[in-house]
Image (cartoon, rainbow, N blue to C red; front, side, top):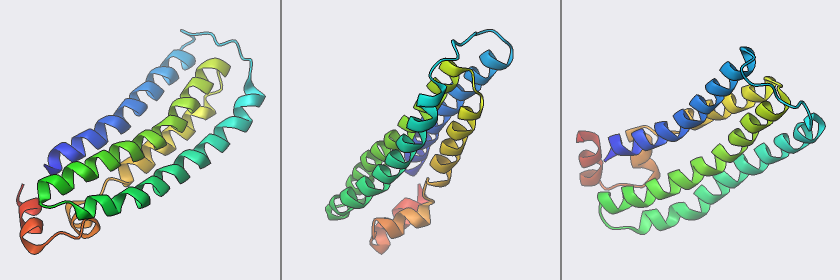
Length: 149
């Protein structure tokens, strides 16, 4: 259960990382020539979208977590929390994808640092088994089940 949860979280973060790495490779080796237009627009829009995405991800998590706590049994709680986590990561991933697209369109590699920072935030945000048990307020039996799998 926890392994699947962790793999899903790492896959979402990994997808953004790979997209960023491919973009970096294309731009740094001159395999893709961007138009260079829209730099000012992206400089204004990307930071706003980052703040909105990060804020929304934490707001949605806070709003949806009580429904996961009401679930009966570890399996149901984990499924519910996994849905919350996927939504949270999607809200974090959107600004990262925008930053990579901005790098592709403008040729400015500094946008990729934003995407990398978001990948790091995504990975750091994956709860450990202990943190997950605390967040879901698991019973001692559920906690033992989570720790053993």
